[in-house]
Image 1 (cartoon, helix red, strand yellow):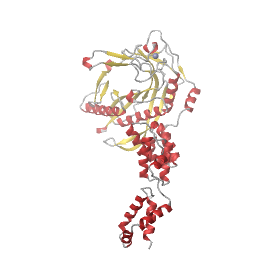
Image 2 (tube, protein in one colour; image 1 turned 90 degrees about the vertical axis):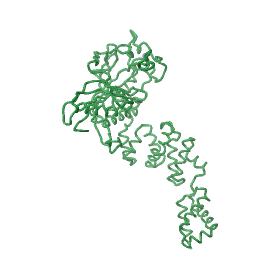
Image 3 (cartoon, rainbow, N blue to C red; image 1 turned 90 degrees about the horizontal axis):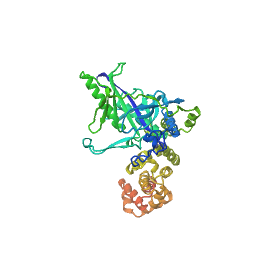
Image 4 (cartoon, helix red, strand yellow; image 1 turned 45 degrees about the vertical axis):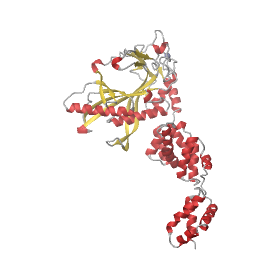
Length: 492
Ligand SMILES: [Zn+2]
């Protein structure tokens, strides 16, 4: 970083736990329903309604905690976080405060060293301390009609009120915007992998906030921190942090001071602007929630969740590198989603060729999926069929080039590899006898070219290859054609 400055960044992630129903009532958590369709006295905050904890929330939170290396507290306490806002009908949010669900994580993350343009140069390991992960309920949503200045009505939609969230807070362990970027992507991947959250930022079920300050390298004390909100994608977050670091360094170098405040990122303008200063900051007056007992999680319960955990992405990536001799980049790409990793292993086994399966999936299959906006679970080509296609190529039944065309047709029609090869008459003729016959025919019907070739015009070899391929309608194995032709033409 320039002129001996260093950035200090901490992150908070709110991830919606992917339950069917809300955290303290049985209303659906479905996204996109009619406003206020999924509400009841509990999530509307009506007097006398009592919360009951959804067991599934605890299971998913436990999965998330274990995947993020957090220690789950045997006993955690729900607390009321008091503030007034139109989308919070009770006037408080049920959260956790001094006894959170889980604490003390040490997460290993792979981060990239990037050049000025953001291109990845190399990878290196980074350790991130996760302070805590607690569970809480989400608030509703305010919707405003018309432009800000001409607002006629504002609406409150409480469908989201009471959906379960996991709030994941780190220590200020990041020194660059890209480290923060790689960490958030890691958390997203892991939460999806273990089925704890869909972690889809577009749908708002993963949101993040960043605390950013700068200081001179070697300085023990932290600078004044600024909180960044409205970071609607991981890339926006990275850009917002980058902007904020620059802004703070410029301010300090010009002799100014940093104010402790919350700033919003405006992606269109590429700037942050002040939302509220510290003077306006909330005092939440936390106190233990009287309507809920302490949350007690037994060792047996945690062991049960642990037994059901899948092999995590980092372990699987390592295994792919060892067992299938894949590069880090290839293994990382194939383990970016659990479903893709499963698909890969099935295809590798069906093909009997893990390297080829990796190449075909990463180049051909992912391109087709990308073009049709399908995910790997929706692929019209099953892992078994891709394996068969690779097998046909390895057996030299078809060429690699033909294989690509076959895959495109399999993808478009959902037909199997052998079926497409048969229908298109592509199967390579690798039968030596059959090729001998074709070669003999071609030589017999081109006496003039044969004489010229034997008189030394060797460029005519290509002509003979072309004739044989034509006669076989392109199905002859080119390598075999070459060998047989060479032998027959050169014999006197
Ligand atoms: Zn409800």
